[in-house]
Image (cartoon, rainbow, N blue to C red; front, side):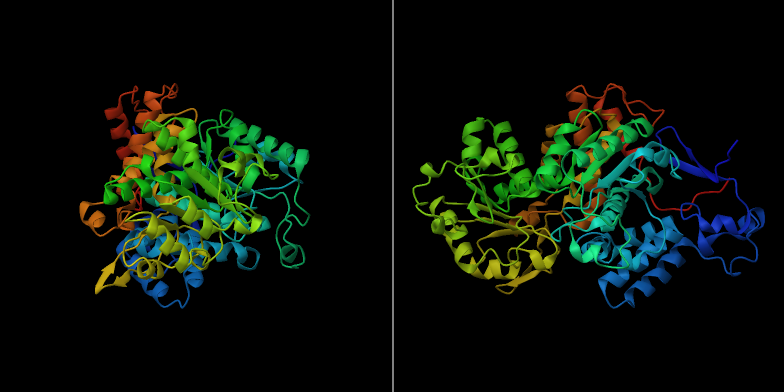
Length: 577
């Protein structure tokens, strides 16, 4: 009978309480989930036969954090800091997360966007050790066996990518895995889902990125991407295996591109507990910012006109969630859709041209647009001017799209236009916040997708709220896991939007700031989880209660709140058994 190298012990709420180690000697140091590095006590060194394999000094976790912070501070670039944190994670999971938790505002942009985009591009060159699962056409028929042999089997959340739509940089072949790793680190930091409950998966179906195919160091499946029936057969095989091995785990689809993202999300919505963060998470966090803006404007969402510049998965996801919110506030579907415009590289999306199915809902009949007399008229500036756009959202991945003329035009449409340049990384942002403040004479309400420094305007510094999906997806995941929801409903994302918006303080609203500071990350995530769990109970999709806890919420929201609080993990060393 095979003996596990180590086994975590769990309490009543599914929280990790300790770890039983079945190894002795140097082998213990090879496993990042259980290694304490220089923090093993003298008694532990003797008990587990580690004496002689470590220096004599015993450090506390606090000592280790200080040492690591000093090393990080001496790194010259963010990508070097990312590499160090990832290598630290590969050696000692607790210490890596403790370092991040010591200043989440500082480290979130390093472990996630914008730095993680560069890590994806350099994945093959930076590769050091295995850190997830790679499924590709040559091994997909053995997916069930591969998943069963993953070291950690109590998986609660998995982030899964096919690597095609990575941030603003597109097809990265096998290089998308750092996105999964980064997002799962945020599940841990925000929602307290322990690292050994998290599984990053790359579905490597090839790449159409010729630069990667020509790179002798490229580590991925060196073929053009699977398409059509071959692609969807591959995905089907993965879903069947995942559902069988991890029946209660949440699958977050990540960075699938355009139509594929919608097709995969919709096809497997009820077959596996899943959602697409690029579509639904992005929509949820965008609506959170808009709800906060309405408090500042003392206005109603129903009175605004919306334009999403960038009709990919994220952009249409935002349009979808705006529509959902408008309808929840009492507007009918037709009127809600009429107030939302989407725009791609050819201009306002209209019904008279061939477009992907996912764009059809918000496509406009060109005959209703009196200003659109020729293709040359179909510009962002003309759309903002003629449709009286009040909320302008950028998901185009094209830096500098929101020019001075466009911002000034938006200011003509209302007293406080909402300008949201959301594209990542920073160089892809549609506008720089300081420019928007200057061009709008301080009128515009601004939030961005990437982190920006405070803007100095009229003798005062203004924090720029970061409209980051990390405010919603960790809490949504925890809410689903804790409630035992058997599917992820649209109402979960609406609940998350309202929870985030309500976390913006009155002081920040007075300054026109639309998001809470990142140091509120854990508090926001737990509140999102509780709201999502309450929605799951209300919708009666919690038939199984929580599969990971002896404590049952019994469809009582107060008991669910207790479970959410109690099952969270914090980066501290366990007693070793």
